[in-house]
Amino acid sequence: MPKQIPVPNELSKPFWDACNQRKLVVQNCTSCNRLQYPPAQNCAKCGSAAHLQWKQVKGRGHILEYFVVRDSRIRRLQADQPFNLAVITLDEDPGLNFLSNLPGTPPGEVPVGGPVEVMFEPVEGSDQLIHEWRVVK
Image 1: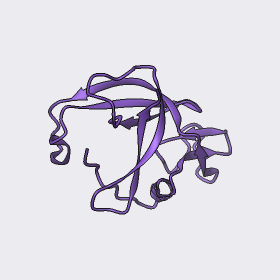
Image 2: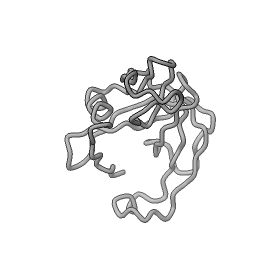
Image 3: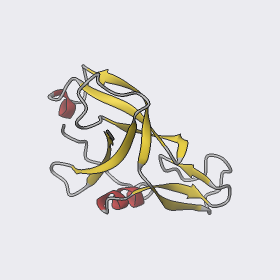
Image 4: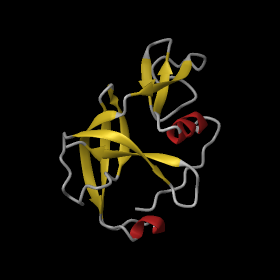
């Protein structure tokens, strides 16, 4: 499936740089010990901006829910319809969610509650790796 090419900005660049090193990182507020993703300027819990750091996480999670995309308006994705779009909850913090099309999992055959692990895939036309999730059997 073709991937969207990320356009890192000042806030997201550390995340995308870590992906290129095959590492999954999220923001960590050292003031209140809270993980957060997607990245933000301030901690969503205590509001601190000065105490946000990047922290590597294990990259394991579970499928919270999913749906099958059958009619995407995004041209780059239309050739691969239908495809899954799953919400992945991170094991280290079930409040953190990621989206994935679950490469290798046929549309509609998603094991809700099943374990997944992060993987990194190249993006055609770019030297950027992106994070995806695969079902662990």
